[in-house]
Length: 249
Image 1 (spheres, one colour):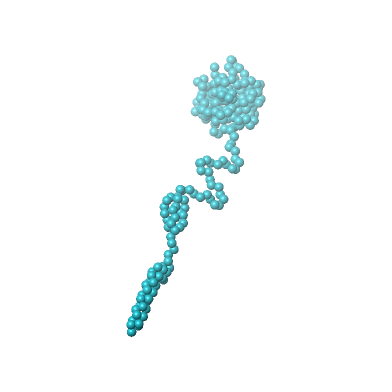
Image 2 (image 1 turned 30 degrees about the horizontal axis):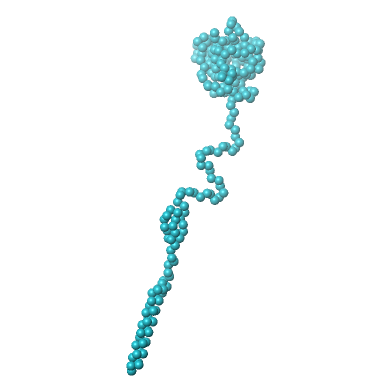
């Protein structure tokens, strides 16, 4: 009888020990609940000092843009405009019939001299002996046939002949073409580049918007009449076109 009680007590103690060990094992195993265990997070420190638990480093935060990946070259960033690639060349300056570059001048309106007078256009040009040079100064138009000025019956005009700092001879003119002596008339003005002498004379318009670049080829005769220099221009391009200019004392 005592033996049976001792055996039963021993078995109870062993069972209790075994049950406690099993409980301890179950509590230590996270898988025993039947749920999947979450993975351990990886802590990473980014260049800016911010801690993240995603395990992935964030993109750079300094504003830099990665270079293009399509092979294209990025445009210049200095504001410069690239030169044209079509081979075009800027237009040349005004040139005369010989291809020489014309001088650069200011286009200023001409004036009539105080001694300018109305004269009647002539029917036919005068005979000339080309030669001589033009003396700078103020001139009055004292005769003309056909050409630029004599498309009406009467004319009155003046001109200033001067040289540029580069030595080019220029002529600034103001002429009124009139149907009658007292008419207001039609104004013709401009500044021309004079070149050559004798039978190799040219006049290139530089300022009149409707005639810029217009070139007259002809002859120059320079003489002295009653102590005053006179030059006569004859232009075969307009048959019978001739102008006579007399220097104002």
